[in-house]
Amino acid sequence: MPLLSRTTLGALLLLAATASHAQYVWIGPNGTRQYSDRPPPPGTPASKIVKAPGRPAFEPQVPAADAAADGAGKPQDAKAPPTLTEREVAFRERSKARAEQEQKDQEAATRQRRLAEHCAAARETQAQLDSGIRIARIGPDGEKTYMTDEEKAARNERVRRALQECR
Image (cartoon, rainbow, N blue to C red; front, side):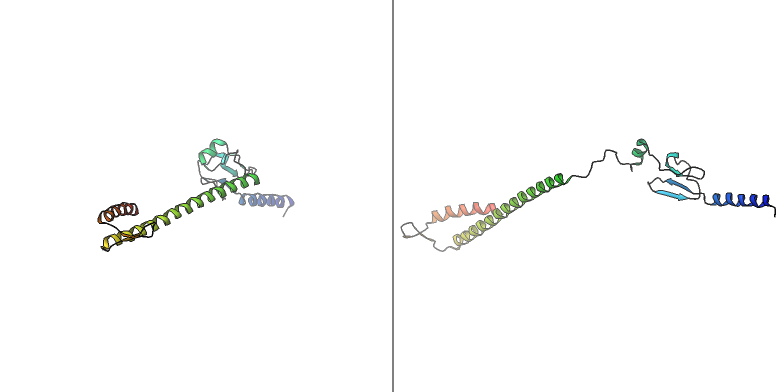
């Protein structure tokens, strides 16, 4: 085979090899890279095509308008992560708020416990008053006296009002 035909044949094989490695890369509608040996679908903007045969590869610079339309773009003025001092201040604020909440919860639990004790005592007093037995009291001078019917009725009314708070 003559030298010219070998060179021509080699050049044709080399061109066929590069054509077979043709690959397209573009950014798909959901923001992921798409790789294919076929061109991107019609309607894909040129700014989204990253690589095409015969064209150098580059990272696409997505304009702000396209980024807003995609919803995948991040603002360039993204907030920097908090510094150690800012994190410490936030931690102390959370700790203080948690301590205040725990104190409020403890006070509420104490109030509930006192109310339960008060209600139990009122129920016991009502049971004694309703039992019909004579109720004796010891006065400051140590003298034992018995409640009259009027005193029992007044005491029963006070207990009834106290029990209304318990329900």
